[in-house]
Amino acid sequence: MIPLPLPPLEFRRLVGPTAPEAFDNSDRRPIVPDLPDHVYGFVFDFGCGCGRLARRLAQQEPRPARYRGVDPHKGMIDWCRANLEPSLPGFEFRHHDVFQQFMNPDGQLDSLPLPAGDYEVTLFLAWSVFTHVFERDAAYYLAEIARVLAPGGVAITTWFLFDKRDFPMMQSFQNALFISDFDPTNAVIFDRGWLRDETARAGLAMTRITPPVVRGFQWTIQLEKAATGRQSVEFPADTAPEGVVRAYAGEPSPSAHA
Image (cartoon, rainbow, N blue to C red; front, side):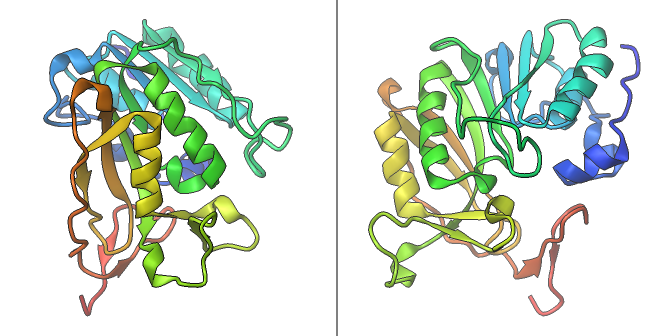
């Protein structure tokens, strides 16, 4: 395969990790282990950014038969179209033209249907997406996952979570916490009870839940269609060491006292 160009540093900073190794897959292993090969039939990358996962998927074995990445940042999508699409048959990138205060301020709508047909997607990726959307949009896109996911398909999603029972001042319609008054979507933390109810309402089951590597950081939740007979599992305890995760700092680091 022709060597793929590395995205510009300013784009890598926007998506998080900046080291070139984070964009490569030298051992050619599937980026989501323990999934059968057929899951890589049609990969939908929701929030593809500048193609970090696309580059890794293109280098893995088995390589996806089809890949579609969408993102609200038009500059990154244009870069992927110009620099990745020509070298990757079956891969395509589309601008998801929704409003985002800093990445797409001209977007007119808060949410849009995903560009995929019903029951078409075999692997849906939403890495560091639901950690940056409002409650109403998270609910909308959970329903979209249920719509596009094929029978036997899998969605890999990440979330910041808390237990609303620890915040008695919150009302029934309030299910998210924010850390920034300047950019609320910098990090959105959802009540795990709300997430369980909302996935069930969408017709999805949480079939695998992986706790964070640093306490309170990203949970990885695997979703499948509940109609297939799959049942949601219980949340495990978050027993990870305490630590701090800084933007652009690479891998999370446990604190010295953890």
